[in-house]
Amino acid sequence: DSGVTQTPKHLITATGQRVTLRCSPRSGDLSVYWYQQSLDQGLQFLIQYYNGEERAKGNILERFSAQQFPDLHSELNLSSLELGDSALYFCASSVAGAGNYGYTFGSGTRLTVV
Amino acid sequence: GENVEQHPSTLSVQEGDSAVIKCTYSDSASNYFPWYKQELGKGPQLIIDIRSNVGEKKDQRIAVTLNKTAKHFSLHITETQPEDSAVYFCAARWTMDSNYQLIWGAGTKLIIKP
Image (tube, rainbow over all chains, first blue to last red; front, side, top):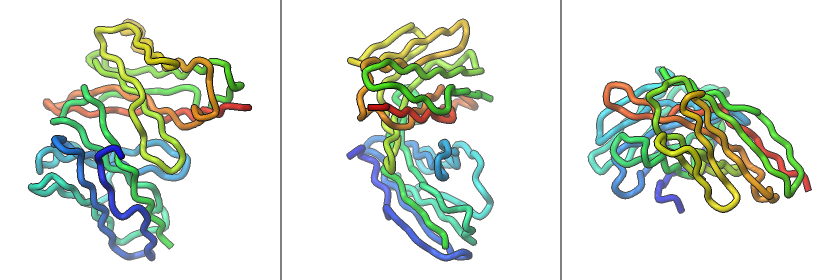
């Protein structure tokens, strides 16, 4: 157990639908990062939050949004889903905003859009 | 911004032999370089990291070397075992507007042949 909790582990939904993925960071970590990993692909950075505020944006589609709540958990909302959105979505957390301590990843949510 | 190139994309070695994965970064200000191992269906896990004030770091069968002048760092795995089969990602810390992020290589799929 890495200390980063992601729910649900698996999600199957239809095209055009909307889903919410949830992440609870490791205790004491203020930063949360969301990544998308398609089959046999690398880690595509989507967005970072630090202590409730958006800090950095990567290749996140306009159909996707995220937020970090006062208790530091984060949610990634994916709407108007397309077949190409099928992927593993990972959340990672870190101490403050510093990379010195690396990231701790959750086990991911596998999204299948049918 | 920072760019990290990782080679090779796939590496196949005989069990017991050594494996070397190389990464090159572009931002000379980067000072922290972690390596992550991702097993099938799981989230990436930190296996070793190195800071820019150190040239080499070892942990049992794995080691990382850093050449700041050439801006490259490498992961060395000796006496490879079947459980070393996984995808390995390198990363470099990048700073922008006082915010730190890890910039990732594309990953190397390591296959250990029995």
